[in-house]
Length: 328
Image 1: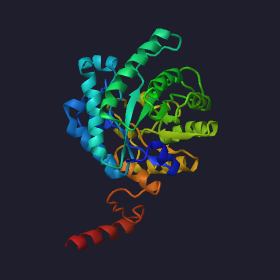
Image 2 (image 1 turned 90 degrees about the vertical axis):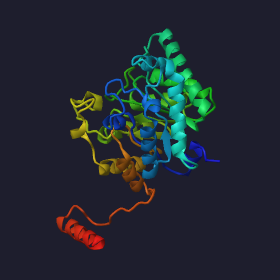
Image 3 (image 1 turned 180 degrees about the vertical axis):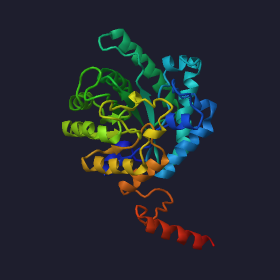
Image 4 (image 1 turned 60 degrees about the vertical axis):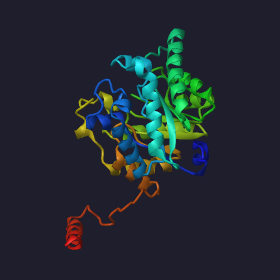
């Protein structure tokens, strides 16, 4: 049997995967704007290939592509009646790509239905989460990730729903500034989630490595348990520190793309500050995960990293000449 996510975290840092929706949008399989995951049933081979790319790059966890796979979001593009099919397919495809060694995480995300002072809104969120969980559990997941929540309150509702399954829960928030939309700083938000029983707390999406590191540092200092961090691979600004606020969002983000080495540097710095679960989010592709694996001392599959210093033209020229001689 595979070790659980908690067993793996006890052994050391766990490397997650990268982003799916924007990667598949750039390949022509996802519609920019809605960013709903009907690709799971319309183009399953495209999703399977991206999962396999992340595994090949060194990911130890695959998150199923069920972001925005809630009834209300799917209804906005005419797929509400395929809720079960989309969630089941998301898990099945991830499991096929994961094989015997990589863990598969079920996925819940913000619904845009939450209102801090509305019991009715909380119940609606609970219903939406329960439906997704039921269909994902039917295919079999190893644990759950509840991600990209802008309100601590909605994240807590998702956590309550996951806890009914008996599986470990990773709960991560997205920050647009130094506080959540319901007014909690990073440290207090982490304490509330950990106090409610989340096995791993942290932050994902929205912020690039430079802006996420202070957030995750505050979380790390606030709790004694496991902490997660999965930044985007798009450069943000101090004025607008979250990538959906950049002028290039949603489909002109190419000039904002970070290099694999910037994500590798983030992985090292996050590990050194005590982060336990490290990965990427929107914009993070196989090359980024591969460099994070190298930075964390995890050897990616069939790694053939050059040892030449490409920062110096002479070294690059020598490497090219060597390559030409080798190939005749």
